[in-house]
Amino acid sequence: MDTKSAFITILGRPNAGKSSLLNALIGEKIAAVSSKPQTTRTKITGVLTDGDTQLVFIDTPGILKEKDRLSAHMIKAIDNSVSSIDAAFLVVDAEKRAGEQEKALLRKISPMTPIILIINKVDLFENKEDLMPIIAEYSALGDFAAVIPISALKNDGLDIVLSTAKGFAVEGPHYFPDGKFTDRPERAIVAEMIREKLLELLSDEVPHGIAVGIDEMDERDTRGGETVLDISATIYCEKESHKGIIIGKGGAMLKNVGRLARADIEKFFMIQTNLKLWVKVKEGWRNREALIKNFGLSDD
Ligand SMILES: Nc1nc2c(ncn2[C@@H]2O[C@H](COP(=O)(O)OP(=O)(O)OP(=O)(O)O)[C@@H](O)[C@H]2O)c(=O)[nH]1
Ligand SMILES: [Mg+2]
Image (cartoon, rainbow, N blue to C red):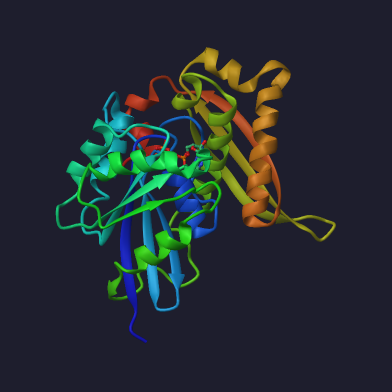
């Protein structure tokens, strides 16, 4: 059988729904999703193999302005994801006006790379006619190979995204074993599940200064003959005052984070999980290269 593959990078401003789209296309929750901007911090690869065709999607952080060392790495992750690809998805939020952020992203993509404009969150429009001027405005930003309105949240239009993506596959080997849907280590997926809950539950600056490290992740057989997954993770924050907020009154916040993250982990790995969370302060880690690297957030 002649195999085919396509590498497709997903770009877009913060919160446009890039990671939601990646998860929906792969059918597994491999990337954290939240209503806060700058949820994704590194490039995340999702793989979908269908018969002879393998699609490799690369989700990227939504960020354009450098404000510290971490954001510099996030921008680098975007820049490192736009070369040697077969196509790019520009994901835009139908509720937002087209702007400088999209233009800046388009400038990063080689003129040789076909770009598919994906207009996301169309579920928020009761009257689909209201979408027409929005589609026209975004379409005027560039020369797009296709324009596809979707709802990543409601799984609407994804079949068109997939068939369009397949059209960009070129003859070549499959770069990942069939059945594998991400190159992310299990520990990284778990850390992101925990950070996702912190992003949703905490407000303002606190969650943006958080990194999660997995200290232990091991399966264990209980006396009752069951297998459980023991995970011990540390939540690093930037200030002593943030530590108090993360732990919450009587430990309530941390308990809540643990409960929600555990549910996600159990669903993903299909195994009963015992999750222990710790909180530590690492002042100014977002500007410390060694710590950024340690947290797996470096794109060198
Ligand atoms: N209504 C609606 N909400 C959506 C849709 N897709 C994503 N969202 C929401 O939009 C928010 C941002 O989604 P993400 O997937 O994290 O966005 P992102 O582009 O990856 O964001 P960054 O990683 O911060 O750049 C979340 O609250 C999602 O639930 C959609 O189709 N419809
Ligand atoms: Mg994201």
